[in-house]
Every structure is written in structure tokens, then in C-alpha cells.
Length: 351
View 1: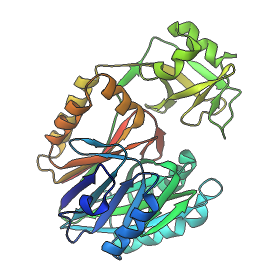
View 2: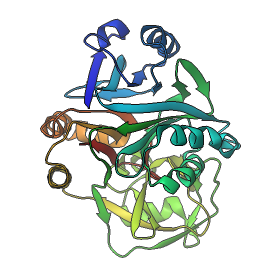
View 3: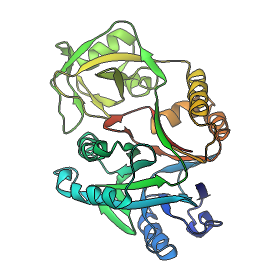
View 4: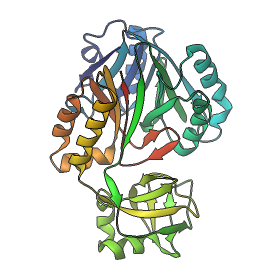
């Protein structure tokens, strides 16, 4: 298979599509102002080609923050694209669409992946999607777009998740999740007084969540939203830790970027040697796939901000480009199978 990446910093879709011929699956990353127009124009240009899209930044060897980016697969893939609607209420109502698409595509764990762009309520959406996907062993990688809008096959949807099933007809696929944080000390908290709908974390071990965070890290209220770059929370999920980013202070509580429930067990995390961790991820991919045709990744907005502040973002993209054809987008939350995480990178590698 082959992966195409085209972009226009000024939002010119024709410029971004230069050189794209006979695509078999397309992903559109656009800006808020032009999203609907780009969705319609892309469908006119490639009618009937399975496509999904959202509002967000794209990247290859550089980042397009407010223009348009197009990532497309061709030459040896089969694909289907669709949506589950009403994700804030009942996404399972539409799960037969995914089941029919999987039946028609006929892929499995070795050669097929699901890529999704979501407008919100991610944890519930992922549980719904993965309940169907896991019966065929199909992994999922994706993320949250901006402004609550996604697209599929030339139509724009709100309160929905757009997904693409992609089958590699010439080799394997495998998904990865990269965590650049490790546990800080032996802190262990039980969450309570949470507001699931608004992602509010009220108390930890019976004390104000805000005050617990401040006392441990010796920070002010104003410093908390940026200190999460170095010290997010982690939600224990079996042997895995899902990163929970702090959005802002709400009274004595903390508003987060992902849901925390009463009785969830949380730990405090700290930033590790991210350059070494990235090198290890690249080495692992090379060990698993001596020959690679494409890598599609989703990087968290907070990773992008952290790497940019540290002057590392361009080096990061250069290092990932050494793997071959690498492209992706900056999400507001990352998806990995049935897990909704923050401040992470997820990706799929095609042989």
C-alpha cells in the first residue's frame, strides 16, 4: 500500500490534493471556517471513495495548524467508512452499521484496523465500537476532533463518531500506544465527588482534588493547567495506566479532559525521558516491521504543546519520518482499542 500526505497552510484544498490519484481511503483534517466546504469539495473530487474527516491540525515533516491536510491510502487497501450518530445519548443504536461494514470487508486482526474521529463522549463511544471490533480481533486507533463536528463520505455530522475500516491487502497491521510518563512516588488516590458529564474531579481520598495536587507539587491555582504537561494523573486500568490531563481549576475541584468516575483509582505521574521513549518506540516498530509502507499516528494536543515548548517537535517529526511514510493529526484525546487517553500517542503501522 501507499500513503499520501498533502497539505496547504492557507487552506487551499486543491493545493493539498496535488499528486493524489486513485485513493482508496481518505482522511481530511481541516479548519473550523472551511470544514464544510472542504468536505463537499473532497466528495466532488473523489466521489464514492470512503472518507472521514474532522477539524484539527495535521502533520508529516511539519505541522499544519490552521489550513488543511489530506492523508490517503491507495495501491492495495480495501476500506469502508461510516458514522455512529447520537454518541452523547445512544451510539449503540447504530452499531449494525459497523457490523455490516466488517462483514462486507472481511478483515481480521492480522490485516485490518479501525480509524475513528469522534466529536465527544469518547469513553462510551469506544466501549461501543470495541465491543463489535473485538469479536473480529480488529484494533482501533483514533482521536477527538475540534468543534464537535466530523464527516464521513461527503456529509458533515454533529454528535457522531466517523470511522474507517482499512484492510491492508499486502501485509499486516499493528497498533501502538506511547506513554512518556511514569508514576511519581507511591501516591494512590480514590476519586469521589465526580461529575461525569463535565469531567469534574472533586475529591481525592476525601480531600479537595485541587488542594491535594497543589500540596504535592507546590504550585498555585494559576500554574495547574500548564503543570499537567509534567504531572498529569493516571487512571489505573488493569496493567495499563490511562493518562488524565487537567483542563482547569473549578472552585476546589479540577476539570479534566477525560471522564473520571467515583471510586476510580488514580495515581500521579511525571514526565520521563521522552526522547529516549520515542527512540524505543521507533526501534520496537522496526523490530516488528522490517518493511513498512505507512504509519498513521494521533498525537495529543498537549504533547504537541510540550514538544513545541521544548523545541523538540520538529526533531520528533524528523525521527518518525525515518520510519518511512509517517503522517497524522493532533487530537484532543487519543483512542486505543477501548481506551480513551490524554497526553499520549497512538498509531497504526502498515507492513
